[in-house]
Image (cartoon, rainbow, N blue to C red; front, side):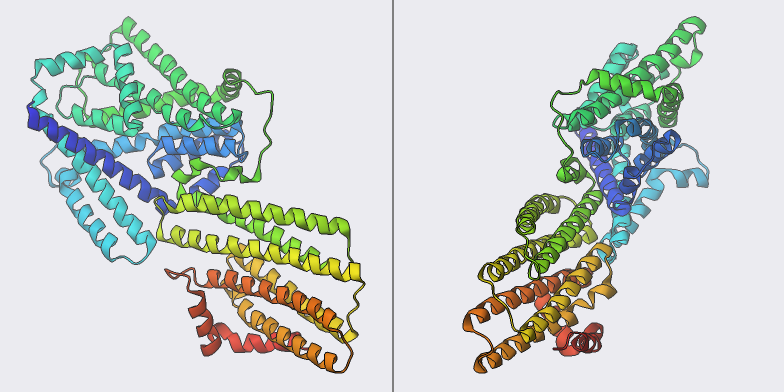
Length: 584
């Protein structure tokens, strides 16, 4: 193997890892947050946990990503440690799917069908389809499928390149001597562990072994310990992820390590003991890519069968390995904004969306409470409004910061639009809570100064207040449900509130002329209805973000001009409906 063959080997490895990364990221985008949400809502049923762990890992092509998600779930209080054990075992089996895909490179035969199954035959076609979809498709789903096909093609090409670069090693005495070192179970397990720890993927390290096996120089006694070591090395990813986690998160990582090590000790120990007694002839036989996939799969199936009945014991062991700290940290609502979820952007966006929904509820409750103070001022309620406004500020700070980090990652077009929408919405919700405080201050001034509005002014304020209550209710529910039809009702109602503000000001001027009201009362009234109108403006922004999410940019002013000038979304009919309902 000369210098240029080494360069080809590393080039093939780079393409292999890059293709695996592209394919994995695209699979995550294609699945969105669906798989993660299913995992989150999982019951304690062990069989469901195992099957789901295997399915999720098979889809996203990474047991590391699955276990990191589990660390994040437990760290955030979303899931219990006991629920993760069976999922970890399922993930261990799910990761073997990659090995089966890569085993296609070892297919030999001269028949047309077998030639068609070779990667060198079908990957160029898949690559061409992937390129066409990536450059011409308009929908996210089609683009993601194109990226998956491209990633797979690059991965398989890298696999072929590695194999071809090592084709001359079969007769190399140095290479044979190196492989003989790995036939020692301890050395082989250690080598597999180190390789996996370096490239952070057991699928990739097993893939490298499959590429080497195509040379025909890898025997069963060499392949087995290397595969076992790769399985142990896969536990390093959740360990690194849990370093900054809480006690339970560290216990998930400990459970991963414990399951891997015990699986290897029991299954490998039993096999090598039986081999010592019976002397299996398979040990000296050479194995190809398919047989390595078989070894990988059978090991994980046997490990699951052995350990699944003892999942409760594994949980207790994890708790014993990672002791509970004296000071217990309370689960915080913002724990769901876990950095680990940034690895699965679809799920992270879903968590942000849920938190913004909670923020919307708090802002709505705060505003409603401030409106009640206008009729019945209560100092305790006023203080509560101040506290809730501070809470909303905290929501804005935490969510906005997390969304910015999320926007820097690899997002699908849909998720990117959603992140932009949420950044707009959190700002509007925070401003609504600010106006709630302003209205509370007006209510306090009215109470402390003993201000009494005229009956006409009270009636007008009541009408406008009812419209504000409705527009906030409609906006919040439209956002939480993603209801475009409901969102279409906001702008006509916002225009009605604008008309009410103008009408109330005009009526107040009339009362001033007639001596029925004072200038001082007018300042209070103006401050109050201005805050009403500003709340409606922010509700309008929220509704526009829902309606315009399908476009690449949120141009609020352009959209509103089209709505009001062209009557889009039945604007004039709804405007008349609300004008009649809230007439003064």
